[in-house]
Image (tube, one colour):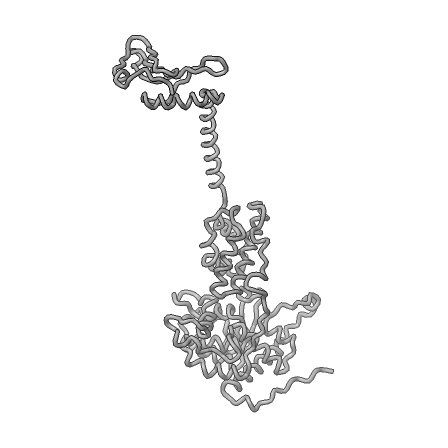
Length: 437
């Protein structure tokens, strides 16, 4: 520790003169007092030797005690062979570089695209080409994806972020939805890879089969006894009347629930007994005309008796458009659940059938199965279902529409449902058509 020559009182009594003053304090520390003509400012300088040469450094301290502390730091550096003046310049450069690095990192972060930004770009580029313009996928992402990772930079998304999303869905018991969400998220990140927004797809190492177990092809078909039970149970299920009609229409026409939810009155011809599904509403993008049996026509007449719109068969709550694709399915599902629903708990098992839970798509499969049991040829059933022919040669060269055969198939299906719901079909024997020789 250097011996201090100045007392606090002596330091306070220092006054500027006409000349610059260097007043020694000890240990190489000097008080520098500028002349009166230069303002008489007080500062501190330190004289030290390194490498046998005398060096001077101007200290940053503004008080005598602070200058003495800084002197000791400098002396310690000199003792280690470090030139304080050089170190001071280097530290200044380090601080400057640190500031530049921080600014560069900030600029990089600002330039990074977020997952929400990526979704919007993907939606504008790919999803808008879907029939609904990507509305359903947007709904799913807004509910189950973007709240988790929407604000993350795309480059920062890891495998764990994706499994957090799917795990939340699995906890809700919607395993199929978890697989679907994973598939859609993977499509979005592959879109990003293709455009060099990221180098690697964070979903690449996630096996779909590990999310919610192995997918099982659904084969649920309602039996004759279940159709009878459904007819008995429906009135006590407290469904919206239009949903009751929807159930029987789906079963008797083999249509998809999404096609039915968007149905317009302009496409129903009561005189010709037809309902046409336009290409923009059908799954394969081709228009499809359904010939209505008396059973099916009765349900359309029921709808017409209390219709609320001149446009849509099924109105949403706002009375401005058709119901959501999920609305009919949700009403049916809510009446086959073990959960207590606040306003429907009394009817939570009203539509439960002996064969287990059923969905609107199971009605479509059931109708097709009944047609097959009635001896309808498979090619005709496929036409009734508006399936795209999988065999390319047949698809290209066999263009017959089989309209009369389809009409007969729907008529027979309607007759069978009439017997099951209002007659006694237990004593009716179904005769299958003989195979052509």
